[in-house]
Image (cartoon, rainbow, N blue to C red; front, side, top):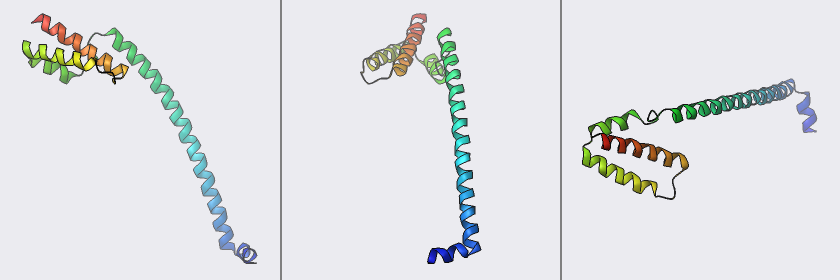
Length: 117
């Protein structure tokens, strides 16, 4: 009996309809967000692919400017020590491929600077 009484009340009916409209709008909003995220992910993967190709073409452009500045301020002994530390770091087993490639790139730059001095 209570349900029949509640259904006769116009405020309860209006509140129920409002709740249904709110849930419908929320669901549509989530669908839009999902589609936007999917398109953004597609464009990001395309951008990452082009960035990696550009990085392969340039020698040491992928290295951060702070690292280049630090190497410029090092003397020959510091360069030699840094190369040794990086070689030990590469020998670790728990490095990802990207980290290993970055360290190898830094070592190449350090060896080049060491040879130049």
